[in-house]
Amino acid sequence: DVALFMNSAQIGAADADPFEGMQEGRLDSLYAPLSYILDSRTEAGVYAGLSVDGKRRFLRDFWRRRDPTPGDAGNAAMTDFYRSVAYANDAFRQSRAGSILGWRTDRGRIYLRHGRPDEVLRRPVASPRPFEAWKYTRDRAYWYVFFDRNGMGDYSLIGTNDRREPGMPDWQTTLGTEAADDVRRFLGIAIQ
Image 1 (cartoon, rainbow, N blue to C red):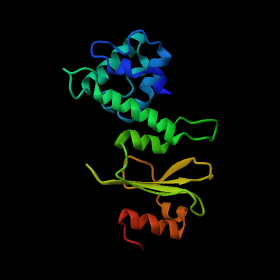
Image 2 (cartoon, rainbow, N blue to C red; image 1 turned 90 degrees about the vertical axis):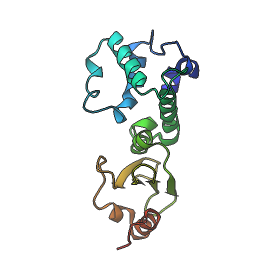
Image 3 (tube, rainbow, N blue to C red; image 1 turned 90 degrees about the horizontal axis):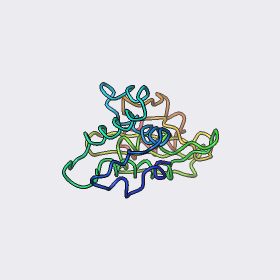
Image 4 (spheres, helix red, strand yellow; image 1 turned 180 degrees about the vertical axis):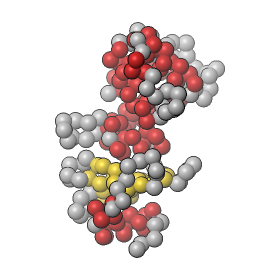
C-alpha cells in the first residue's frame, strides 16, 4: 500500500527529499501507479533500467515537473495523487486471484486518470450481476460502465466512450436489457 511508503510528513516537507534513503522496493511501489499518468513519449520505459539512485532521481524529477506551486512547501500534485492511490486501494480492492490492489483494477485506473467521477450510477444488487456507470462531465465528457462478472465485487470495464480504454462492443448485451436501458438513460444515450 502506497500509504505505508509515504507518510504525510514526507510528502509535505518543503526541503526534504521524500525519496532519499528509500530502498528500491519502496521506490518501485511508488512508481508503479504512475504508469497511468506517465507521458508515453518521454517517460514510459525509462524507469526499469535505472539504478536505485536513478530511480530516486526519476521520481524526484517526475514530481518536480508536475508541482503546481514550485516555490511553496510540499507538492500538492504528488500529495493528491498518492492520496488517490490510497483511496483506490481501499475502495476498489478485488478478491479474485488473491487480492488485487485497488489501483491495479479497472475502476482504480480510471479513478487515477480522471479523479472522482462527476456522477455515478450504482446497482449493487442488479440482475444478472451488479454494475456501475461513471460519468465525467468536466474537461472531456467520458463515461465508463463496470460489470461485476462473478458477483464478488470484482468489477471489469465493459463499456466506454474513451478510445484509450478497452470497452466491449456488446457491453449492453452483457448487462441485459433492463440494466442497459438504465445505463443509457443515466448516460443520456438514445435507447435503441
